[in-house]
Length: 210
Image (cartoon, rainbow, N blue to C red):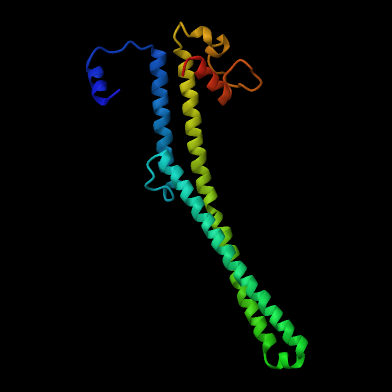
């Protein structure tokens, strides 16, 4: 329905809607509004998610953060492997010198040079490992965003299913079990007569022609 049609409908005769249906629609609207608002203003996420207006942008944000973290890890691993290979090469070189002439190797400073080089390389490797660890900081922020988006979709679906069950047309009600038509229960665990999972939601929608 276009906006012009909605405007004409609003100016025309009001639709007769069951109060319970109106209440459910209002609840869904409030749920969606409040959840999306929380996604934008939660203190811990305010800085990290500034400028992300909706769930789609937030999922893009998560993908970007994950990709950046993966790139940082791969780069740090490559650099650490390079430093490790340099240490291995220097070790082989020193071993050859010590085998050929131990006294000369020590006198020439080769041993001390090796020690100094290894110390510097290990410090760099340690920094790379620290970078890898720090790259994992995205988990906390993206995890919170994911949970909020998932909870939003779950709550929205649950509310829509409840509304759908309440407004099933008389000629369609026989297609749905009477237990389901009674509406969701607070504790569905262990019950076989209520909508509990995605497959049952799919079955309910299919039985109603959706």
